[in-house]
Length: 139
Image (tube, rainbow, N blue to C red; front, top):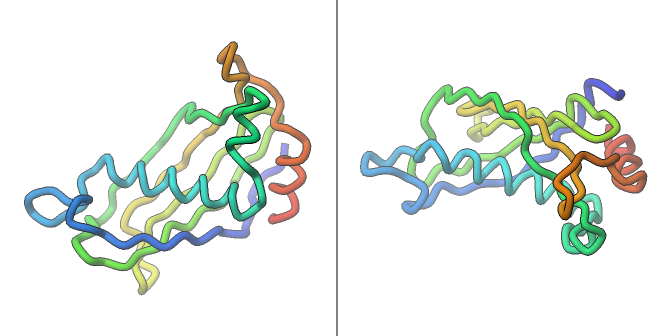
């Protein structure tokens, strides 16, 4: 098990009208979308193709999430999702993700446990060694 990865991957987010409720505040479920996209872009930045993983019947699924809505994001804000791996195990990992404004103020924070699974059997499997080595390289 590897703990406390410090390198944060940054992904920019702009808040569009479609992301907000009638009051111009981001609707709660959209934070999950922002975090999902940032995790996907982290994989892409490491050269990991989800299409190739699917061809090998490998998938990553959210197993558990703790989320704290600290301060509402609003229409037209320019934000970043900061994504760090805080725990890496044989078949799972925990990401810490924060949505921050340009001043570094945290608007929303989540710890997301993701499991590696065989998508045909929907059973846990070891994270492929290539992916494991990429994750340990960015620490």
